[in-house]
Length: 522
Image (cartoon, rainbow, N blue to C red; front, side, top):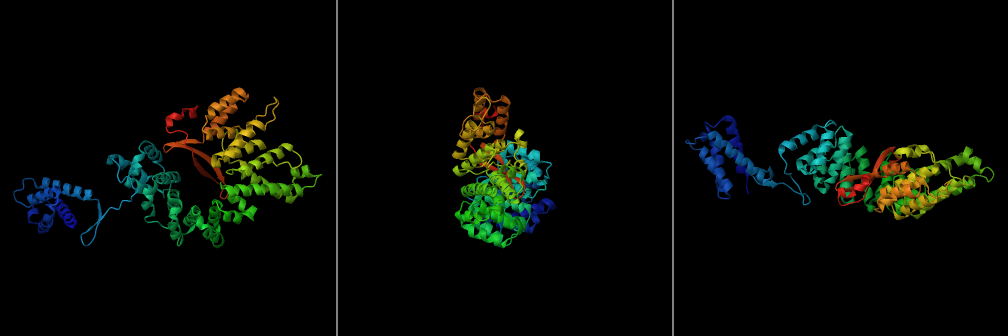
């Protein structure tokens, strides 16, 4: 349908509303616009009503020209809004609003008076309106599905408030594919942090399906955006050659991004890339949960133990471990400490064997004894008395605890229960080891059991102090959060490549309804 006459009519009526209605009947341009819409009057009763208003305005006997003009103009605006046209081309044809097949909501059924305040808070926020926006999201999350609010959130990705920009990125990612056109529109490969967040949202939603976008943008991308695009290539196994090429052609943080991407890919070629250079590769493997990285960490652990045993003569072994008299031994012990810290996020029987050997060697406190874990490697682990660990078993217990959060498998769960129940040597003759109580409680939680009830039973049956059980409940449940209709198990995982804490999330559906999990609050 040719809608150009309707737009022309609206233009003429708006001009009359400004100039006045006294000479409207003599305005030849208004008369011409009125003649142009006559063919449309038979197409719909609405157009017939518009024609009736227009012809009344053109007569000298119109009793209330101002009111009639206002009613006609309102009706024309409503028709154009209903048509959903966004652009009129030179020939008069219209381009319809493009709605993606996955778009569920264009506009929400909410008063503009409410959305107006939300829009103002989002567009003007530099952190001052953060609490109001978060509260609105918690109360009325459907408002953020409105396409207008989505566009404001995309703009907010460049906010000077990091907290607000990160929250906007999280909300947009929850929208799924519906927000992708807004993220790709006006994307600047040479941009700054806002564009980095756009890449992160796109890869969260599409992963390898956006491969062509990453590669296209990389042709001109620079600095932070280039790093983010290179790291996003990890979702597709076919990008292995490309990433290995980037490790040779890129420099600085872009090269690091390519190596981190390779470290997160479940591939034999990635394993081969890291295997030959343990010292330089280890920092990139601390944040991975791949099966091959667990096998490689275990392989290096046993090789380092063997090399350390060979480096120390039989008579001076204990003294050398304590005094670190040999530079060669010192380097091996430092590397061994870093290997232990890299156990987090690694699972499987090979890693379980490493836990057992490390604990046994430490317990021997003699030939082949393990060095104490470096406090600098353990200090980022949060919460309670475990913040300032001094004991090796406490350290290993918390490494196992965080491994269960980030990369839980049945072997780690079984290990946690076994070490808790059988690795202690207490004065009362029991074998309970409190160092592994948090890991055991987390294993119970992951199996869908009531860890609070279990801890209460441990206090009663195993004579563990009530305070320790309460501390353990606090530690375990502090990582459980209600989000998007389900429970999230969220753990802190240290990214040693840039010394920043990185959140790794693992979905854990504990209950279909929030109210059904009252036991979580104890």
